[in-house]
Image (cartoon, one colour):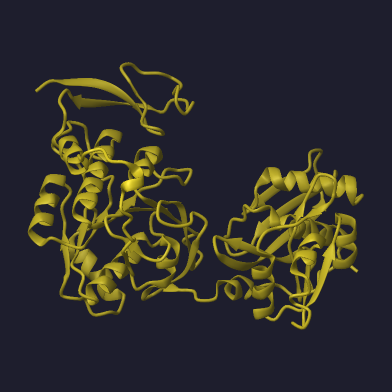
Length: 458
């Protein structure tokens, strides 16, 4: 059995026979690491090829098969997955250490076991006793069909799978598991790719649902992200801070559902608790009668959310004014500041500007443009925005307010939480055609940034 030395990019998995300073694939510097590779075709690759081998057929003659969804009994997780687990799917969950990945999956395992599903929890990082202590802390009775094995060798894990024949498998974590068919150590690109590939082949061949837990790098992305993300069906990220009780589960890849959905959880002493009304949660601690605070109606997948955007504008003490954003794209914020200076005639060139989305949410859609601009103008002019106002709309470079999709969902969410006035693009108001005429809401359509600030800050 011969081995050879190769160099693998830790970011994208690109392989080279020699060390390279800059990766030609992802253009990262100093990302290559040395690995030993066996010069033979691993058994796992033959296994994967055999699992998908079939005869060619015409696409128009393929009989469609409905997706069989398995409910995890945790509504927020089912919502992010697109309605539940699809038979034979592989789900990768990533997040910072201690954020709640293992806790959530243990809750899922116990819930599935209670409805008669056979679950195998592969604890590669903790002992069975440590996992049992965490399960007891959750305060629920452990079901009889929940099995646990503390093993890091893939071949041994597959033997346990063949004996138990589980419906769901959890591998915590994939970076610790290794296979004997590769000479490199656990956690390397080759090991992660091979182990994840064999778990994927197992899921596709036997219809088993597989959860993989992935470590993250210093910048918050999954270790070896391109290698893992291409192999699995669904990628979920846990967002939040250890000092904050709220956790956001976000889908960044989903072959069986939307990639824009989020699930909201609260970390309690008894585990992760679902937040049934996230809009109310995000607005609970909103300050009253303070400038620079505005509420936006944003859409995450199919779910409307009301979120507070905060702005702080103060005169700079240095030559170069500071610009800082949290939860808002920095380049988008710079564009809005320029529009406020040019179209609304606000002198922001000598001002430090800080923007924050309360609750740790990240807003990427342009419908928050008008709310961000209103919060900046409110802080700059020291004029409060009415606490009963909800604002949304896209701002163009000419200062015009452009229409945004799903305005009716945003308005309904504002009405449900007791807001009295909605400021939105004029074209959205025309499309609604008086649908909310007798709703008790004061709905105002605006055409440009100057007109909008006139209504918001009067």
